[in-house]
Image 1 (cartoon, one colour):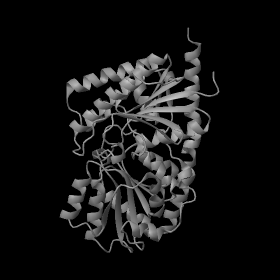
Image 2 (cartoon, rainbow, N blue to C red):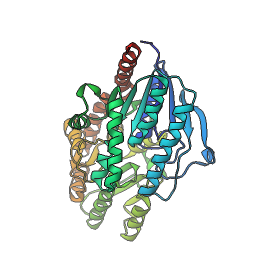
Image 3 (cartoon, rainbow, N blue to C red):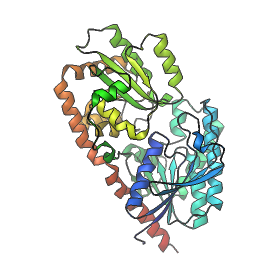
Image 4 (cartoon, rainbow, N blue to C red):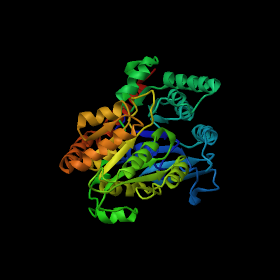
Amino acid sequence: MPARLDILIVNQFFTPEMGAPAARFQDFGRLLVERGHRVQIITGFPNSPSGIIPEVYRGRLRQRETIDGVEVSRGWIYASPRLSSWTKSAGFVSFALSASLWSAFGRFSSDVVISTSPPPSVGIPGMIAARRLGVPMVFDVRDIWPEAIAESGRLRSPRLIRILETIEKNIYERAAAITVVTDGKRERLIEKGVPAEKIRVVPNGVDLSRFEDIPQDRTAVLRELGLDPGGFVVVYAGIFNPPQGLDVLLEAAKILQADEHAAATPIQFALVGDGSERARLAQRVQNEGLSRVVQLVPEQPRERIPAILSAASAIAVTLRKRRDTHTVPSKIYESMASGRPVLVSADGAPAQILLESRSGLASPAEDAPGLVQAILTLTRDPAEAVAMGQRGRQHAIRYDRRVLVERLEEVLYSVADAGSTAP
């Protein structure tokens, strides 16, 4: 077993894109390089969540660059600012095709391939690369597709569901190991027939180094965002897509605006990010007269997010109602790392994490009155709010990606070693 691994990652999303899919392997990739490994990644041109490719990348079919020591190979991808299920599907298919070409003909060397989903179609170029190079593949699952999107109502075609299920099953069978982000997802894959010994849990986590040495000028940060530093500021920072269920924040803002005496201090909401729901949410803020209490802040660079979260009075983590309650948004760990109390509006695992860590307050998904009561509880007990933030920070240490990368490294060594000794 070599002390240094050549690792090839296939991931549709990568920096400078925002969100959990890009951040997970931006951090793991950099950390693996720091641990002495060679890391290459096949990815697309950045366009998520806006659907717009930055000018510096436009008009190209492929490109190579190095980011944080990671050797990045980008391939053409269909992108459109007209965000819809059709354009997103076209993006998934186009990346699977271009990444398959990279996998089949690109100049790569590797001891192990990691293919990271969703979408499950990313497993196709991963399998091609693994077969061509004669190495094992690890399939990394952040969300179980097509099950998750079918249950959410975003995918209704029985034929397409069957196709994706066939792809999913083949990938599970051919993967040497499967990594998932929660114990609940591990249990679900076992229910679907995946051998338990094949599945390892590597949580999403957070790079705690990004939350060290943050400037403490909260007033300046909030004023730059158009917020009143003297108020109680609830911040949501992330993707504006349907699964996030961001309407609950506007409903809570409406309730609080109608009862200005509910809290001793003004309460404001800052929604930071971009996505398919942004225009609709902005229109709703305007139509319902919520602009005094709700500020929609443009998407910020990833390096700016820790300062924004740390300037908040509380951080919101929301999900729409869903059948699968084992999904844990990666932003819950970033929220804890900021040292601020967390307000979860979701069912299942996210609420359980808050209960165990005592780092905030939870209310059911889409329950605006429940969220309002949680906010008011924090405003009425500032000392406990501070204590919640401190407990959250301590809990986040267990999910530092500088620690979790060791767990991923163990998986990679085990499959690479088994692959090298196979007959």
